[in-house]
Image 1 (cartoon, helix red, strand yellow):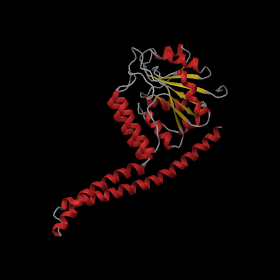
Image 2 (cartoon, one colour):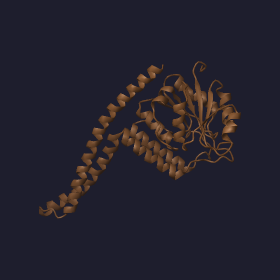
Image 3 (cartoon, rainbow, N blue to C red):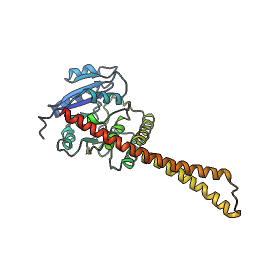
Image 4 (cartoon, one colour):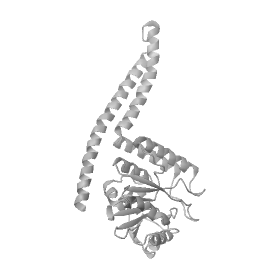
Length: 311
C-alpha cells in the first residue's frame, strides 16, 4: 500500500505511561516510518514526556485533564491527511496500522476502528467491561440503526475531513463513545477492522473506573441522543407515558362500566395526564427532529465550504 504521498500522523494521548510509551513509539516507527508521531502529554507526573521525546516523538502538552480534552486538542492543533489515534499503554498492535488505514486509503470509509472483542487475551478485559461495552454498543446500534461491534476502542484511523468536521465536547473516557456517535450522526462511514488486543504490561495500571466511567458513558449517550435523535429520545419517553396512561386508564374504564360512574378519580386524572404528556413528548420530538435536520444540513454545507476552501 503506497502512503508516501499522503501525510499521516500517529497521535498518542498519554497520562503516566513511562513503562510502555517508548515501545509504542518504536513499534510505530518501525511499522509506518513515514508517519509523524506526536505524544500529547496530559499532565503526567512520571517520565512519560522525556522518554517519548528521547524516542523521537514530538511532544505536545495539554494542561486540562481528561482524555476528551486531549483529543479535542489533538484535532485542533494537528494538520494531516490521515490521523491514527492510539493509546500509549501498548495494548494495541502497531503491526496492524496499515491494515487499519487501508479502508481510508481505498475511500470506503472515513473512520476505521480496531475491534478488540474478537481476539484478546483472558486478562485484557474485566467481565464487567465486556458487559458494559456490549450494553452501550447495543444502545448505539439501536439508536442509529447500525451494526457496530466495538465503539469504545482506543485505536482508530480517521480522514482529515472527519477530524475537522466532528466536534468533541466530552472531557473524559466517554470520548470514544461520543466520537463514534457523532461520526454516525454526521453521515461518515465507519469500517471495523479486527485487531488483537493485549493485556497491559506488568507495572502498568489502567486509568478506567468501571462503574464511574460506565455511568458517565450512559449519561453521554442519553445527552447525545436527546440532541441528535430527538424523535427517538422524546418519542420513546412519550410511548412509555402513553403506555402507563393506557394501563391506568383500563382500570378507570372498567370502573365506569360497572356502575356508569368514575370512582377512581385520581387514577383517571393520572391516566389523562400521562396520555397528554406522552403525546406532547412525541410532538416535541417531531418538532425538534425537523429543526435538528435543517440545522445539521446547514452545518454540513458550511463544513464542505470550509474544507473546499482549505483544499
